[in-house]
Amino acid sequence: MKAVILAGGYGTRISEESQYKPKPMVEIGEQPILWHIMKLYSHYGVNDFVICAGYKQHVIKEWFANYFLHTSDITFDFTQDNKIIVNDKHSEKWRVTVVDTGLRTMTGGRIKRIERYIDTDDFYLTYGDAVSNVDIAKLTDFHRAHGKCVTLTAVSLAQQKGILDIDGGNTVTSFREKSDDDGAIINGGYMICNKRIFDYLENDGTIFEQEPMRRLAAEGELKGYVHDGFWQCMDTQREKALLERLWESGEAPWKVWDK
Image (cartoon, rainbow, N blue to C red; front, side, top):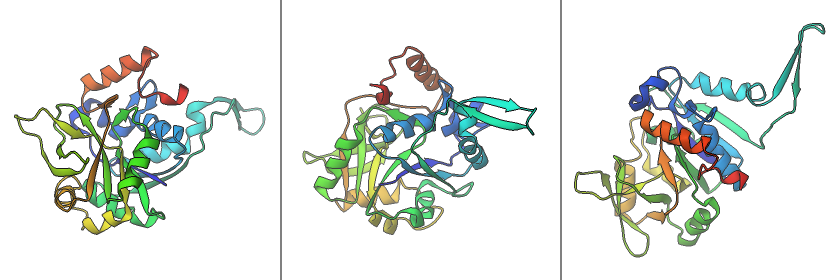
């Protein structure tokens, strides 16, 4: 299965960083948060990625094009026709397709645009601005067991995200915006979608978190995998600083690939 990562938005709430680069390219521990997300998936054997780029999409493409330069020791030998030697290579088993899904395209429209790159019944889908230690293997087993169109990872956190009402069978019965009265079980991303999801997406103006999600919930086609471990988005400088502190402590909960 491929992992699709939404990485095309402006990131206006962290504009100190995103005026220069897409928010998924904002660094935590000298690596883009996009890299951290991909490392989690790779830990569970998911190494085929589709990146839905948009705003400053060239930054993402150039970063992957120069991955060896970013992660290895390099010798520039000017005595031998400007030869570049990559020493101590740090490679990944990744296949990465970066798709320019448009500058102003909404989330559902971005997903619709990458339909031609999905060649399996199911695919992973997440946002490019949140890290977690969610068990991707257990998430996958849960999705396959119920056979519904979409599984999302439900986390308990009072933030301005999509709010879920979940019944005893883990079916999401409603999907709505946060209100002041909510204690908040939210959509943490880290979703699995059946390719039937493309039937719920109309055009570039489709916002995935609105009509498609509400319709899925109304039809009983939306399940919530409840994750009680670590999850944190990076919407603000305060949240970025929190993730930096966790990373620098050597105890970043989402760094499962070294455990």
